[in-house]
Image 1 (cartoon, one colour):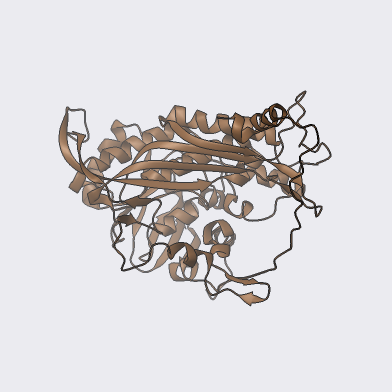
Image 2 (image 1 turned 90 degrees about the horizontal axis):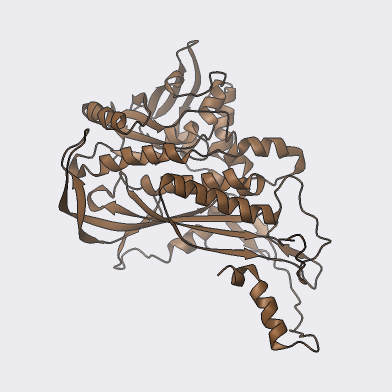
Length: 453
């Protein structure tokens, strides 16, 4: 840069280069037992869909969801846009899409809002596929440690196990995370139709404790994508950059970086601040606006869409204009708390937000639909074509961010991860004397993974 970075830029880079955003491990060089492996984990995954071999894939290994080829269907479509009107039955090619992610760190720290926003973020991944897509149904799953239910002793649970003070207990996570995911789905209007749950914690013969101390909250969703909206358009000079959804608050500060490091009790307050909070009703409004645009078919005003997640505005407002660049006024961001600093407005991971590119000619129809659906929108700036993201502060005339996208989002040096195999000496199955089939069945049915069915 040839100058000292601003504090906003430093915070921005911390989020942009976190494990959560960069996937250093999956793209890293692996050295196991002293031998460098020829392929990264990403390369191994992508090798399952070799180029040049016929397949039914529409979207794979990019965008917010994967998609396979669908069919021409009879679909209900509106006859007018921007105002109420009758529906008609028309032919529409719809491709099924699937996305999945985990929201482990937030669910460990604050299970209910953590699972809420895990569901909400995954829903935005569905709706932000291609040039916009339709969410259909969800999957929610949980893996936790020993439950230690009061007055319900289970022989395999070790009462001597200690759990971190900065994380919720496995029982609280199991109950509250499930409540959070269901609560969000119910308020938004998406059914949870599938899932699984596991509880496990044991001391292995070598003395190692094997347990989901940090939980897994797995969220997946299926949806439908119009065959004409599968490819995002490229940013062009003069296009408008629009944010839609709820206002910014001091929540989800540094979530991408917080979820990428080892948690500790010393950072408990920072961890809680990094957990987002959900507003399913706002996401429902945003989805209705997105859906109305998708229903326009060839006249869909959305050129490209990215959902806001880790890194907040600092991430999504760079991704949406890569590689062309854009200029923004930070004071045009919709805020719900006027005490927010510029750093917080730029970096907070407040929920229920998407960023779009639209053409100036479509501004009026887009605003009309947004007004009808009562969904807040803000035009933050426009694509410049100079390859930089520049954020101005019209309140004091400063420029808190002025970064070349090539440096920020370009390829970074590959990290190397060194590990060694450990021999695990397991003991053969030893059924205690006197065990009956009835006793064994009783234990099996008390397992969460079995009894939950």
